[in-house]
Image 1 (tube, rainbow, N blue to C red):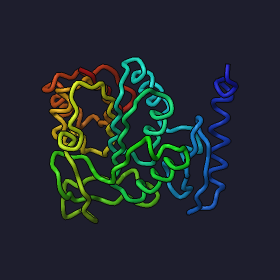
Image 2: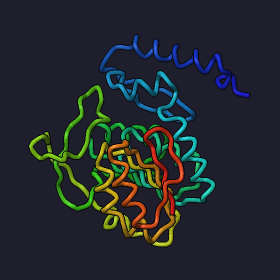
Image 3: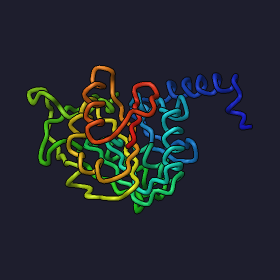
Image 4: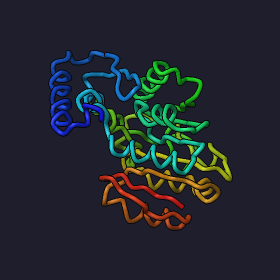
Length: 245
């Protein structure tokens, strides 16, 4: 049994890591190793500090998702809203997926994603695209999250609130696959329904396992859209919902 799994250490280690993270100078990048992978961490960024403080953000979700990807023998992984690349890196290292594509429109997160792929010798294994995923191709209004919480960057529902525009793609156009076993993670801050509407053919023509971050206020329309293409809600961890056909 790993020592870090002992109950008292599971409480002590995150507390120690959090104190270390808080003591680090702001706007300082460091390389840390977590769960066998290396990551460039920005100590000015909340999400990055959580990687340092807790060892791995969304540990339960990642463990469950990786187990299901292996159990279902998925060969393709699409990381929609990849951020710094946690999911893409662990899928590349711990599953048999031979085609991995990460989508990340925030330039800051995309640069960090590229750096993390480089650190883990995955640049030639994980394809990364600096685009958003939506229900149409073209340019979409985008809200730039603050430097301390760039995970809040998102496609804007109100063009007047946008701080810039980014390129967007429909997955039906970008990933014309059929007859494949595909795992998809979607974490795009409330734009998940539009993304799903742009991948209906992909979902119908393949066997897919999906992890969709979806808050309660968006769940009914998202669940309805999934049912229309033959998918059922099979599991849930927090606000992450799991669908399969």
